[in-house]
Image (tube, rainbow, N blue to C red; front, side, top):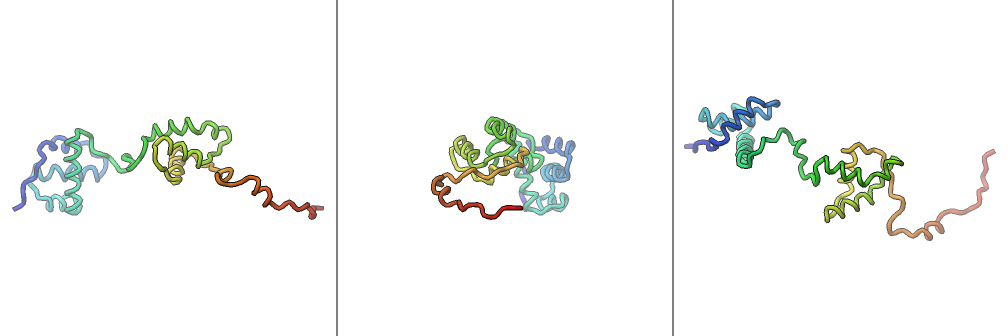
Length: 171
């Protein structure tokens, strides 16, 4: 025989979530908690009633129990969570505002020096793709390549350039 569902402390939160659910997924998540507690349905019956698999129904119940223990509101969508984000959007924007004042005048951002600033702030490596995605999130589109390679030699580069006299002229 299956064990009875626990989580009576989550009942009020699930009822409130059903009343104010704005998406089908939010409604299903609240139903996954409410149906076993109020109607005595098993997890398999709850999965059938919500139209999800047994594993997903179980995951939704587990997520609600974690949220209830911490006293938080259930997450609305994954986009709001920003998985593995290093900074909230507001702090990210504030940091970019402070760093990119020179770029505002020319409208061009050179990414490697910007990457170094983030490495200094976080104390660990930050990938270039992270910087590019962050700039895109905040509306920066005009990017320029780095001015020169950090290990390059200016004198050698000038010697290597072709310095032949201009023989061809447009008439």
